[in-house]
Structures are given as C-alpha cells and as structure tokens.
Image 1 (spheres, helix red, strand yellow):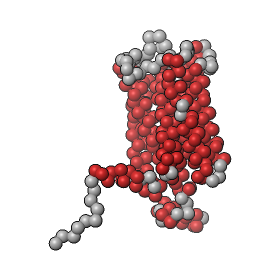
Image 2 (cartoon, one colour):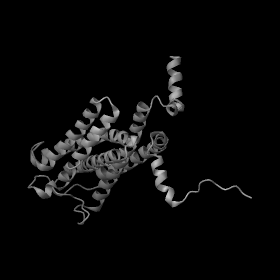
Image 3 (cartoon, one colour):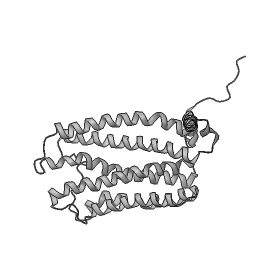
Image 4 (cartoon, one colour):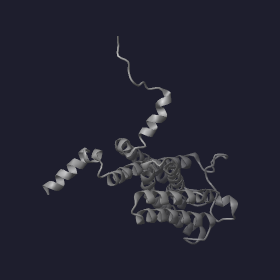
Amino acid sequence: MQPRCAWHWNEKDRPLKLFHYAAPQHFYPLAGRLWPWLALLASALALAGLWVGFMVAPSDAQQGQAYRIIYIHVPVSWMAMIIYLAMAFWSVLGLVFNTRLSGLMTRALAPTGALLAFLSLWTGALWGKPMWGTYWVWDARLTSMLILLFLYLGYIALTSAIEDTRRSDRAGALVAVVGAVNVPIIYFSVQWWNTLHQGASVSFTQSPRMASIMLTGMLLMSLAVWIYAAAIALWRVRSLILERESHATWVQQLPEVQAHRAWRGAT
C-alpha cells in the first residue's frame, strides 16, 4: 500500500502560494533571484530604445531634433505615475491585511518614483525652453507633476522621521493612498484645462500620432524604465528586509550575512 501524501497542489492552493511570499522571509530569496535578470533585461531594452530613438528615428517635421527628449521624458513620466499607484496599492494591502511586506515594498518604490518624477520635470524643462521659450510655466500638467514629486519627498521624509516602524508604515500608507488622487489629475489635466502641454501621443482609444519607428523607440524605452523600476525596487526591498529583520534567526543564517560578519571580524 502506497503512503498517502498529506498535501496535493491544485488550482485552489494558488492564492495560498501567493500569500506565502507576503512574508519577508520567503520574499527575500525570490527578489534576489529576480532583480539581476530584470536589471539585465532593462539594460538591453534601454540600449535598443536609445539606439532606435537617437540613431534610427527621423527628426520631427515641426520640432526638429528637440523632440528626441520624449524618449526619456515620456517613459519616466509614465513610470513616475505608475509607481505612485503601485505604492497606493501596497499601502491598501498593508492597511487591510496588515502584511509586513507591504510597508517595505512601498518604501522600496518611493525613491525610484521620486527620481523619475524629478527626471520628468527636468527633461520637460529642457524640452520647454526651445518649444515655449522658457524652462517653466505654471501649467496644470507641470504643476500637478511637481506636486507628485513633493508627495514622494513627503512620504520619504515622513516615514524616515517616525522611528516606530508600524506607525511609520501606517502614516506613510495614508499619505500614499490620499496622494493617489493626484495621478488622474496629472493624466487628464490636458483635457480638463487649457494647457500649454501637448496631449498624449499614445492613446488606447486613438491611433498613435507619430511614425511607427518613433513609437517603437518610445515603447522600448518605456518597457526598459518599467523593468528597471521593478528591478531596483526588488534590490532595495532586500536591503530593507535585512535592516528590519536583522535580529531574526533566518537573517542571521543567511550566507551573505555570515560572510559579512566574518569579514568584519577579520578586519
């Protein structure tokens, strides 16, 4: 008589498998396996996107060579908004299910989101000077993107100022959830108000308003920035997990932690 297995995998167990990775102890090795491959893929896509955008795509009939800033500006602008929505998503999970990983992931995403929001404003200013004759105007799109940068910086400052991690995560989650209302304002600002900023070049409801080779370069760069953001968030969350779980037995048993302890002892 063959022994009976105590547990069998089936489709109904898949949600349990996902919740398994909600624990930092199980998510840490998964993030370690994923982030190097994602970083490599992002680098390859970025090289391809830059080559298409700056070497292959023709100049624009109206904007000349200045339009090429979109290969940086548009992807980082999209991703700055998406990352904040991702922060709001993780924050809701943390508030509802009280998962430890939620606060860590939100913290890991915030610096990248702030960087991309800054790059969006900076590249927009570089484009605005030859097109509008000035680096900055208090346009609805620009102002709402500046508010997004302040929301990122405010989240980082708030969570860093509160020493108690539970209170810090909860306060940061509230900022992320409330601040998420700014994202649709950024996206629809060119439709709701009379703005200098041009409308979307790519829409789900209309055909693209650019040549296919230009669109290819922009989509390659957008995918590269998206994957880069995922890679750097996974890399950063591993550091945050080690910092927060430093006294846990499973952390002390990690090979990299033991190697670091041995190196410090030798020096």
